[in-house]
Amino acid sequence: MNISIVSGWVPVVGQLLAVAALALAVDWRHGGWRRQLARGVPVAAGTTLVVALVCTLASLVPDDFPRLAWVWGFGFVLAVWVAATGWSSAGWRRRVVMVAAAVLTLAASLGTVNARSGAFPTVDRLLSGNPEHVTVTAQLAQIRSEVARTGRLPAEGAVITETIPATVSHFETNPATVYLPPAWFAKVTPSLPTLVLLPGEPGTASDWVDEGDADTTADAFAAAHGGVAPIIVMPDPNGVKTDDTECVNSQFGNAETYLVDDVPAFARNRFNASTAPGSLAIGGLSAGGTCSTMLALRHPTVYPTFASFSGFASPQFENDTQAQTIDILFGGSEQAFADHDPAELLRNGAYDGLSGWFEVGDEDTEPLDAAHQLQPAAASAGISTCILVRSGGHDYDLWSQALIDAFPWLAWHLGLTGQPSTEPATCTGS
Image (cartoon, rainbow, N blue to C red):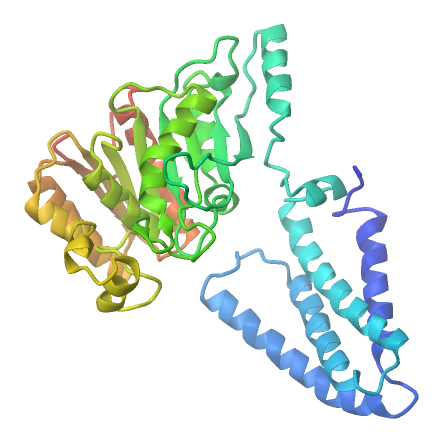
């Protein structure tokens, strides 16, 4: 099962089979090929071009996205067209070939992307669902044994996936992604603080590693601090019933209870994370930034430190209006909405002892307005704040840099290091 799927014979054979299956799927004998290809080729080309333009303009794909993936994407759309237009006149054998052509061309497109990213280099990694940067849980003991034998910490931390027991919340959610710094593997496991990082909406638990380079940022910090960095827990706050809980208890489950009770308990019980006051911080991007601010304001003894990267001023369910958000997430209660609205909470509360970092791109209009609204309100409410507006938009280029910017400040507030001598942000009340 340790066969490469990014180089060698497997991708070559797969692509040849895709071409052969597509060719055999066409009805060459009865003239159907004219209808299938004369219309199918321009339809496939146009569809691929539109998708490529939308994805590129909306920054849904990275700058180095492989062009060959679009070529195979064209092949997939063409295979679907051939199947749709020739299905009724085809025998069962050619129908099987049609399905195979669609599957193989799609696999070739995804395989091209995978080859560029190197996420799943082998069959075993693909079938197990463990990307290359993710350590299989069973390997943790092996790493620790090697450290005990050599006396040397690993050069890098480990990223694993774990299911967080929803003991209190009973929230139905997907497995979390966890980063364990090199120091965690010491002969005697230290009680390290925990940073909880939330994705946006829609988003997955692995986004901060897959796109945001959280593990790379933490590894760089650890390399400069004797292997020490926070444990980073990246849970799925959206669960399995919706793409957007806004981290509140609602008809979609007890997301807030999960993040406030179950996630901290998991970090402490599973990884010996510190239980000291101030040893938990929470951060997030986009809707996750809104969540982080809201959860810290509502539960300051749990999360006295928070970071909002391109967060919004108030909870907003998907792209709905405030009235729809109140109806869907808060059962129609305006008071319940106000109790979870960072702007309202800051207006009416005092939060001495809290610390908040706000970072946003100058091209990101709504989050930019939110940061300029919430940061002064937070400072007025007694919160030590930092704000940084960088050139950029609502994307991972901004968010990965934001985590780099905030990481020393977060480590300081988590008690790992002293106060940074310089900050890229403008900070008050530190």
